[in-house]
Image (tube, rainbow, N blue to C red; front, side):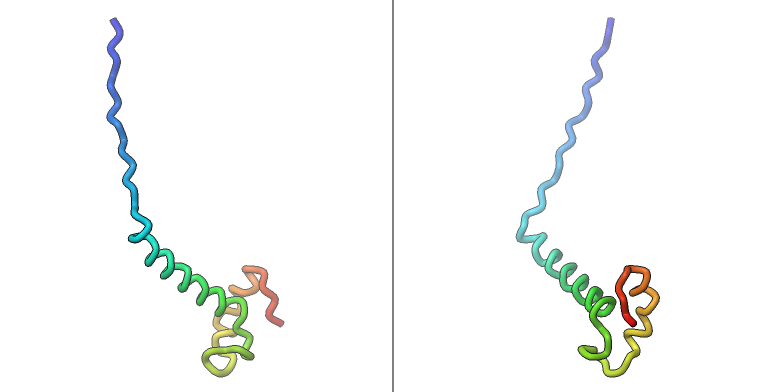
Length: 69
């Protein structure tokens, strides 16, 4: 006598693209800003004047493999 145990069906929710698109755009914008400050901000195209941002992210630049000097 074997008893078969019925497993419950798992329903995967679907997320409409219209609800996902604003969040994806927001995450992309934040990632692009972070990438700019870590990789491209050398003082030449710096949004704030001076070298402050470069010095704040200096060690992170080296850790990620970006040359900065």
